[in-house]
Amino acid sequence: MSEFARHPSIVRALSLGLLLLVWVGAAALTADASILPQPWALGEPFARAAGSGALPYHLAMTLGRVVMAFVPAMAIGVALGFLMGRYPAFDRWLDPWLVVFLNLPALVLIVLCYLWIGLNETAAIIAVVLNKIPNVATLIREGARALDPNLDAMAKVYRMSTMARLRHVVVPQLAPYIAGAARAGIAVIWKIVLVVEFLGRSSGIGFQIHFYFQLFDVAMVLVYSLTFIIVMLIVEASILQPLERRARAWRTA
Amino acid sequence: MIKIDVESKAFGETEILRDIRFEVADGETVAILGASGIGKSTLLRLIAGIDEAFEGEIVRPSNIAMVFQEPVLLPWRSALQNLTLVHPTLGEQAARGALERIGIADKAGLFPGQLSLGQQRRLALARAFVGRPALLVMDEPYVSLDPQTAEEMLELTEALIAETRPTVILVTHSEAEAKRLARRTLRLAGRPATIIDGADPPAAKREGTA
Image (cartoon, rainbow over all chains, first blue to last red; front, side):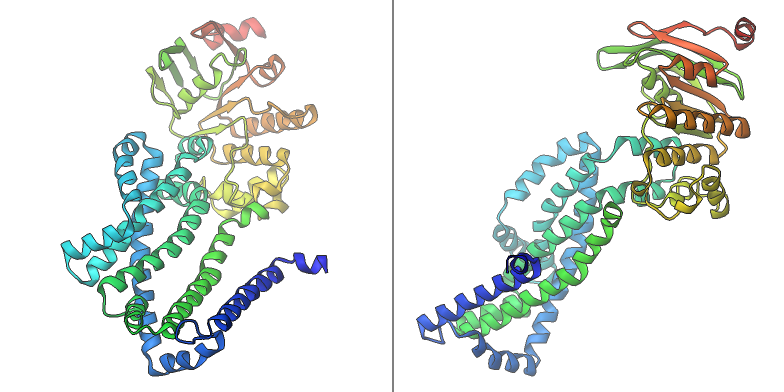
């Protein structure tokens, strides 16, 4: 029993089962499906939303925005973080900005972007990107500070080209930080995307949640949120985790 | 010909090196001796061009190789890639030949972490020699090795120097190592450190030690 109970995937499954049990118990206690429906009662609304094409459409819209925000946020964040970690002067100038943006609530940035740029797609994406860049930059800066000076010296003596240095000396050292920033990044970005959609878009999971929130339709709110959570967990497990494992392969070989 | 003329090297307020002038003829091996912490490694970093913040002038060829105190390999690339990535013009055949020469041909696909420390050091030596450098700079390459491994490394270094004939500047604190590899020995001492012995031209010195 003790061997069995210690296996990570079994513990994970049991733990999730327990959460489901709490849900069932809470739903039984409320005894009102309009406040908290039983898990199995979501099957019918799920089938309806999926069948009508609404669920896939809004899911695709949200995923599109996540990707559109994720790519520039990572690219800019990695570049800034690297420069800040490498060049102290750059860091001194940019660090106060980072502190300001890190402490600016996501909601404030979103509202300001909508007010200044307008209720459009550009404003939505910019709001998410601005929210995420400071976190990525902070994480990558730590990585850039920890770069091995001996490897730097080696690359310099042997006159490795800039591209070769980046690819074979710098990026492998930053890889764990980039992977960490990507995983933390996607987790934060999809949550902010929902808020952005909730506040000012007419498509996406966030918009649908807003819509069903106004109808007090708890079941549909749950259907949309749970579907999206499951999709994001699949993205994490099937894309991000394998990438991270690959970047670490040499450590465990 | 390598000409070293370091007027002054300081870290902040602390002057480490002053008035270090010497020349090394092509193909000559020179050892720099001195107590630890005296500034030998600092001087070597100036010679290798890693550190460019000093007063003075150093004339050196552009094709330089360096062997560090640690192997300083790319741990995330295979042994073979550690040669081919650093020397892109080398070609895989030549790289495999170099691994063969140092006796780890069968380990070409392994990561440096999977090699023994002795093998990592030999790989670092191979990386230095395989580019046929005009100048080879070695910073206490045998420090912290057990006597047997150090002896193997010394023998391999001697053989590779004989095959490739680079100009060699070697830093060490071991008189025995210096005597064995180098014709000429410079001694670094004082604070800031300067050369107290051996800066005279090689020809004159050679007669004295022969």
